Length: 204
Image 1 (cartoon, rainbow, N blue to C red):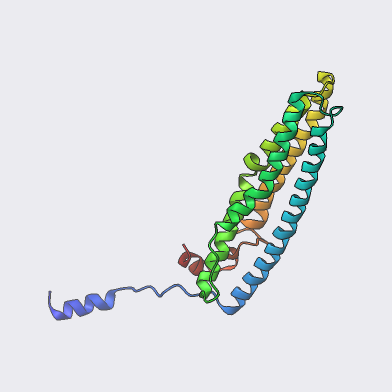
Image 2: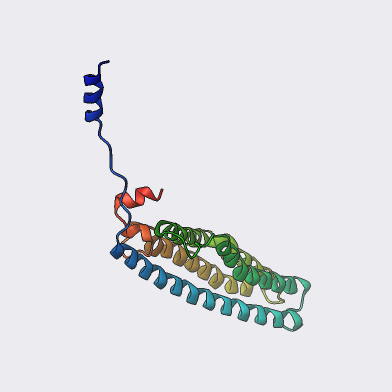
């Protein structure tokens, strides 16, 4: 191949430009939304932790009250509920602390990747709410009901609202993921939902 052919081949190449970085307005909007999301999640975690403490106090009282929990099975249910409440408070904290925080001198893209990592963990926590939030507590309550010295019909009657509440809590958490946290949804908190396609591609 001659020099002229090589030059012609070089000129014929199509070199794509590097993906652009988010501009200042995009970054300001993302930071504002992330601050709003972090505040919302913090308040939600506070409410859930307060509720978990109340549940632990109530079932701790049941455990030591022979009139309310007259059998060993009922007291075992109290223990399961208390342990499940501890799981509810500890598991999200453990998951979130595993996310690496961006250092103070981090670049704009590093900071954005750190925020995206925190958000992906939050999505995973809500999507797995069935096994760490709903199921352990429900098992404990069912064991507690089974140990009560009341007719079986009453036990079933008490269990039905628990199952209904479980279904509602599961639906509520999955709806929060779909409507508020996933990218591409109007009104989403997800930063990638506010970026141009080129910038989103550069983060993959």
